[in-house]
Length: 447
Ligand code: GLU
Image 1: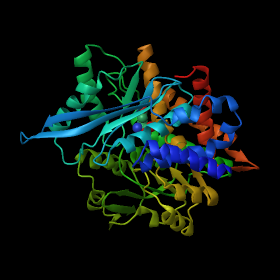
Image 2: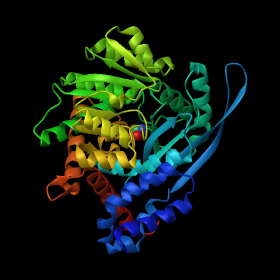
Image 3: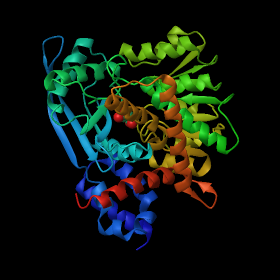
């Protein structure tokens, strides 16, 4: 059997066991394609069925989340926590509140998280959770009641040494606060059960900025290898949430020109670049719950709004996906390249379709989300360390450590992904992430 046929056979098994989960299939397929050779070269791993075990979550919990809205009407959502892999540390990964969340979404994210967390060099397993709750247009009181109900079930499955959730799309500092408050009340203990906490109650400095900063640090390393830097480059950054905000902030600091950001309603171009006022306004837009990037153009005269259009049509040197999975497809990559784009960084988890990622990796500089966006969970890991020490570090200490981690992830991708002088960051990230988890699983027996 050829390698392609062997992978197809493996995927048949995955698809039969996990029907109707296209996102999960996409994530598994990508990892299989990257790691197949190194896996086959390790007969002990093959014999212990490491890959077969890795695609099966250790545990997946689904639960009812009832709550009462401001009109007094009872609402029912579904909550989840997928505890994917604990070979190298407690389950770790965010909670996503988004109307499209289902088990498929969280299995793909939990699977990706396992490799991402392995890359960070910190001892964290992989997990992900969330709900199909749509935070858009909800009042603060509704968000609080939902979070309290969600934690009323989740609390029995998590813990500082068991499973440590954090934020993701739809879950930021406010939601982590309500979730933490309810956990503390139920357990009567103050522990580091969640990360992304407020800075006066156990949160780490730089955590809100970490995913964006880390992505830019990763991009800096890639550019450095080809003798370039961000200064003077035109960058498009999709989304306007927490990840985009941190990315725009760091890019601007380094002298890059952010030319466009986007939302579900379209994109805006900004001819004058971003200053502090504009960067801060991204936070205002996010907390408004309106989810409309048009608000930016209404506020700043130098910005222009393009309704219903995809941001990838804006000419740029560098493009960064910071919104959601599969937001950039093969045609988008073709257009980006045609318009002069030289580097595409996946910052959202699986931000590119499989075809888009392959094309970009072949033609221009490309790196996958599990490497590029690992800065967020890395600083979460540093928050866990600070909580265990009962100490808080300075911004400089945390930022330096983040920088160091991103550099080491980049170097691991180059080390494992370079064949005959050409680096494929997708393969590098998958192989480096996989080998560490696989080795740990092998040493821990059939569990
Ligand atoms: N949701 C983020 C991610 O996709 C952060 C997870 C965390 O900090 O645990 O990696």
